[in-house]
Every structure is written in structure tokens, then in C-alpha cells.
Image (cartoon, rainbow, N blue to C red):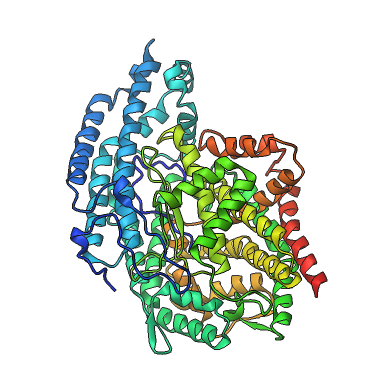
Length: 631
């Protein structure tokens, strides 16, 4: 779930974690027709977007875009230049509350339009009709929202005493969390016309480069044997049982990435420069400070997390990969064997209906309410699961807007990791459904807590499966798989964060060549993977496909934050008396109305405690201890 931002409208495409349709897309309804599922995974669901709009040519879209234009223009005419004076009057609280409600209604409508365009585009980002539709809607929303840009700027300039007095009015007091959160951006606001320029130029600036990345990565093909594959099936081969297939896939990835390195280097350099310009004008001191502000987390807390994780590399990833090399009877693992299946792991594909049952059973054992909400994603067609040409890689749960409901995108191929991805994204989805009652302005949650909800969903599913497994080797395989996932969530994401810091810092001194970016990538990867992983030629290009670097700079540490926090949270759950599930769902229901520190208090957790992160990391180390004892 995206965090709240200074942007007046939520119009961006859904964020993700890592051939043409047969029908004419211009006439295609949003109810997608079934396609061939991944081998042996069973019939896979495709989402039904008609809860938003019936299709890209629906007359309701034209109607709502025109309504957006009119509502935004009317809002500006009614309120611009008046906030400070009117709020200071005796009835100022009620007057401002009415303005905020109108602003929220516009935000909800924008969320519906932008989400539909983004979801359609994620389902097929290479179709020209869809690309044009996505671009046109984005431009219309940006143009309309220019009329709203004044609102947050003027709101934040109101005197503290005046706004505090106004919020004593119950109607405005309801929005206190949003108002106080918005005012945290005050030190970084610019003069109104500069803000307008930044906002309007985003369409031809970073948004355009994001779109170029999406279309480029979706259009790439990787020659593996006699087949030209899209990126998701190629990445999936890195988990194949056949060593030759893993190697062939890795080399195909490297070859295609190398052929496109100038494009990806240009995108990376341009977006890093764009961010540097914005940060410099706004007065952010550190390259990641804008992300910390959006996440409502203190820089020193993130620094403590990163320091703890990097110090733990030797007892986590280095030690685990040495164990895995031994299981595969090798002294070292080539980088393409990092996620290779374990020899004692069960083979075969997990059918979709089994994955559904696993997750819902685990959720239900924790909280029937949590399972009930998650089941709606299946019964009401809120999930798009198949791999398709042109579909965005990775997975996400997009909240859309409170007047609708979330949608989950996956690329399900029947792997155990895909089951955990399903549990992860449904954790987001449940969170988004519960938080929606707070309204469009206060439902969104900072990334750090959003990832806590998703990782907790994974942990519930894993612990359930582990508890039901009696076979020693299968238990070992489950435990090892979870350790790999946690290393990918904590160690790998902190390495990604270190990579981004190095790129953005060095970019301040000039452009980086693709070769230099590759050198930085290899440096941070070598540090995090350790001596048991042999990095072969070609791996220096693998930075090119990570979407978070493009869509959400410095997003990645939120995964590590969430995983370590969940380890501590789950320990509280295991030792808790009755009532934990109710407290947990209450935390999710709060959405963005409370700071993360306030939400953690009922569980006795404090992320500012220097020992907090070591406690979470010790859970992973303890699992590796158990694996070592199994031989």
C-alpha cells in the first residue's frame, strides 16, 4: 500500500514487489476471459475490474473525467486564498471540515479512475490501446489536480494555534490525523508556482520514465533453448530442479539485459537526477530522507535497522548459503543456484485450489474474520493470477479507493514461494479492506506498517504448514524455504537499499555508466551473499529488472522493517493470552490514523530500542541453527 504523499491525487500505477490479447483491447471489457493457466497449477482466476469500470471505452470514464475537471475547478474557485482567513473565524472549524470532505470526495474519484487505468495497464502494458488509455487518464488527472495543489500548501501555512482551535470542532477533529500528517511536510514545501510546475512536469518527467521502464521490461524476450520467454517465466526457471535450465535462464537474462543496458542506465540516471533536483529544492539532506518522511519513520530508526542487518550478514545469509551448498554437494553455489530447489524438497506444482486452502486455513486459525475478508478476494474475483505476455512482473495488492476494494496481481506458477506470495499479498489486501473505513485521506498506511501486515500473513501460513508437517525431510525443506524467503526479505532488501544509496549518492557527481552501476551492484551483492555464492559473469546486469528502484526509490527497506517487526510481533503472539488477534486487527483497522510507534505500544514493542532489530534477526539465526542441527 502506498503511503500518503503531498500529491493532491493518487493517480499512480500500482506498485509491484519485483504477445497481444486475442480480443481487441479497445473493445475488451474489464472482465478478463480465462486463459491457459500455468502447467499443473489448475485454472487460475483473472480479476473482474467492472467494480471500477466496465472497460476502457466505458462512457462512465468520460463522465467521471469531466466530473473531475469540474469538481477540481470548483474547489479551487471556492477555497483558494481563503483558508487562513476563514479558518480563523469562530465557525472556521466547520467551514474547513466541509472543504476537507469535498477534497476527500475528489480524491476518492481520482483513486477510482487512476486505479482502473493502472490495473488495466499492469495486466497488459504492451498493448498500444491500453498504453494510450493509461497515458491519457494520467494526463487528465494531473491536469485536474493542478486546481487542488493550493489546498495542502495553504492548509500547512495556517498558524498552529488557529488550526488547533479549529480542530476542536468535531467535524474537523475527525481529520486530525490527516491534517497533522500533512503538516509534517511543511518544512519541505515550495512556493506555490514551483509546486505547480513540479506537479505538472511529472507527466513528462518521472512518470514518463516509469512508464518507459514498464513497457521495456514487459516487452523484453529471453532466449532459453528454443523458446523466447517473457521475464516472469525466465526468472521462474531460476527455481527449476534442472541445473542446466537454471544456468540457461541466468545466461539468457544476462544477455538480454546487456543488450538493453543503455536504456536501463539512462532510465536510472534520469530518475536519480530528477530525485536529486527535487530533494535539493525541498531541502532534504539525505538521499533517502523523502522516503523516510513518506513512511513517517525516523532516519535513525532505519539506520539502526540497516546497521543491524549488515552486521548480521555472516550469521544469516553467509551461513545459510554455505549450508545450502553442502546440501547440493557443492563447495560454492553459482549465483543462478541461489534459489535452487533443495534436493529433499517435495517436487511437483501446487494447484491453485490447494494454495487457496493453505492460506485461508492458516488465516482462519488465527482469526475467522481475517479469513472471511481474504476469501472475498477469491469469490469476488479480486485476484489476477496467470502469467500472460505483457503482464507486469512480480506481485502487488493495490488498494484502489475506499469506495471500491483492493485488487491483487500475481504471476502464479505453482511454486511453494508462490503460495507464500499469495499469503503476503492477501495480508496487504486484508489490511486495505480493514483500513478503508477511515476514508480516502486516512486509509493509506506508511509502507513500513503495510509490509508488516503482509509478512505477518506469510508467517501465519508458514507456521501452520510447519506445524502440520511430520516428515523430517519435508520439515527441513519447509524451514529452509522460509529461511530463504526471510533472507530475500531482510538481507536482500537491505542490500538493495545499500545499492540505491550508493547510486543516488554517486549520481550527484555526474552520470553513471552501466558498467559503473554494475560494479556497485556486484559490490553490495558480494557483501550480502557471502563467500558461498560464486558470482558468475553476467550477474552485474541484474539490477536492471528491479521495479522498486524505478517506481519507489528506497521502498525496499520497508520489507526488512516489516519482516523483523513481524518476528517480534509473532513472538508476542505465541506467548500472548486471548485477545491478540483482536488487537492485531485493530492495528490494521487504524490505517494511517496513528504513528507506527503508537500502534505497536499495545504489543509492548519499541522499534527505537537498539536491541529491537537484533531480536527480530535472532529469529532467523535460530532457524538456521535448527537447520544446522538437522545435518
